[in-house]
Length: 386
Image 1: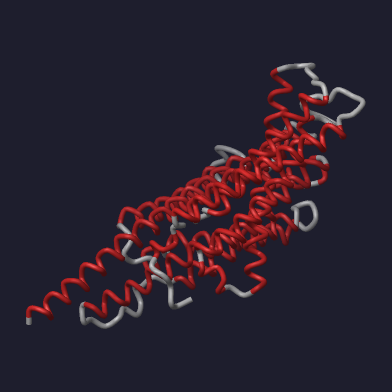
Image 2: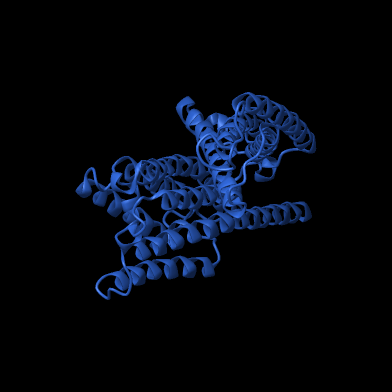
């Protein structure tokens, strides 16, 4: 991946955007019709509720997941891999993981959002049920919207949009797990309690699958982030060459550090989901501590492996580290809040830093590229004048 294209070439062309919209509209229409036909058959003989067993919400979640799966797969294969050629440079297994991550997160978000939406409407219109034609229309429209949105989203995915999807998915999955928990006082212990059998089957599977899928998606997000850092490293060296100075050996962008820490963090998230605290508490705790180590390296060492970033970003990174330390102290020994609140604080701080990091990387890359272009142009003009 050394011969990278210009970062600006990652933007899809007008023709690609037009074709993606056309494909998305056709897919949305097809999903809507398919969803309506399936539900007209499925709702035969009874009036479905908006939420609950054999309800409009259940059918909507299933059809939306199928529609989003098809849409995300088409968007990735037909459009994203055309505009993001560098994705083809990964080994085959990594290409499969990247595609699976995009498909899973789109399908899961659409399915979980459908469950929540129809549950809210059922609570708002208590006791309402509909005939099979009205229910089928609701499911068809929702499936069509999800198919359309998934194709467009996957076709234009970027580090920023993927991080937003990951945040939405995490919040939605944990929210459903909290609502499904059989113990209403689970929060008095820890978040990991949602991933135990004691919280109920639905909460158990929702919480742990959310973590596993999030870890897989984080590995794909890492590919986008590391590419930008690698481009910055190349520009960093080219800028030194253009100035006639030796390339820096120590203080320079370190894409390998970013890759190891983020992939390690993703594997830890997967491990936390696969090994609930009720199954193996020592192993679960060890994985959590390992994840904390990767986070500390990212925050504390940012100034060394991300030179060229504004100093305010490094101050922000150190402030996040101090925030984690302060959150830990408020939990123990100060006992200001319980473990659940501490875990909420940690997740909020880490995701907040990650979003700022992604946006700052994109901005810094554009600035450094422009500075290099200006320097090369000045050198060319000086040579011409001589």
